[in-house]
Length: 410
Image 1: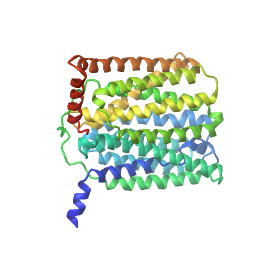
Image 2: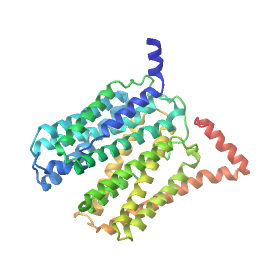
Image 3: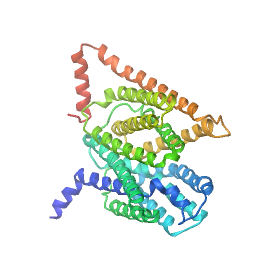
C-alpha cells in the first residue's frame, strides 16, 4: 500500500493536480471585483482618496521591493516554501481586511497582498521542477487555465451574490478567506522537488531570445488598468466583460497544452501574428471607435491574445532553460515588467510626465505592439528562412520533425 502511494505521488499528475487546486482556490476570491467598494463601504468607511492614495500604492511598492529577494531565493528554497508563503500571505491579507480597521491596518494588509503577488513566479516555476520535460506543454496549459477559471468563477459568484441575493461584501470576504485557506492547505501537501537545480534533465536549445518573449507583460496590465478605469461608471458591464475574458482566457490557455505545434520553430511566428492582432485590436477598437461595446470587444480580443501568448512563452522559456533556474528567470521577467510599467506610467500617464489623454495613450500602446510584432517577425524569418533554403520542403519538414522529437512532442 505504501509503495502504491509512493508510486502515485511520484507521478507527474499528483503535483500537477495539487498545484492546480492551489491555483484555483487561491484565485477564487469573490470579493476581488468589489474590494475598493468594500474598503469604502460601511465596514471600513475609508474615503476613495484614502484608498487610492494611501492604501493601494502600498501593494505596488511592496510587490516591487519583495520581488527581487523572492526570485533570487526561490530556486534555492526549491519552490514549495515560497508557494506556502504565497498562500499564507493571501490568508493574512484577507484576515486583516476582515478583522482590522483604519488606514495603517489596511496598509499592512496591502503589504501581505504584496507578498502574495511577489511569490507568484514560484507558482509557475514549481511544476517544471517536478515533471518531465515531455509534459511541460500540458502542465503549462493546466496551471495557467485553472487560475483563470478560479478568477472567473470568483467574479461570477461575487456578482450573483451581490446582484441577486443582496449579500453584504463582508460575507464575500469570508468566502474568499475560506477559499484561500483551502489553497494554503493544498500547498502543504506539494512534494518537494528532489533533483538538483543546476542540471536540466534534458538540455534544450538557444536561450538568447527568452527575455523578449515576455516584453508584452507591462503593457497588457497598463491597458487593462486604463480600460477598466475609464469605464468604471459602467462597473456592472466591466465585471461582465472581465468574467467573459477570464473564461475565454482559461479555454485558450487549456487548449495550448494540446496543440501539436513545434513552438521552437514556429513560436516567434505565432508571437508575430498575435502581437499584430493585439495592435489591431488597440487601434481599430480602442483608438478609432467611440462605441463602448466596441472598446469592450477590442479589450477582450487583446487580452485573450495576450493570455494565449504568455502561455506559449512560459512553456518555451521552461523548455529552453539549460539549468533549472525557473523562478530566477520568471521572477526577473516580472521584475523588469514592473519596472517598465512604472516607467511607462510616469512618462505617459503621470502629471509629472507627458500626461497624455486617453486616446493618445492607446496610440502609444498600439505603436508599441507594432514594434513588438516587427521584432518577432524578424526573429521568425531568421529561424525559418535558413531551414527552407537548405533544401526542398521535405528537408524543412525533416528538420522540424527532428526538433519536435528533441522536445518530446509526438
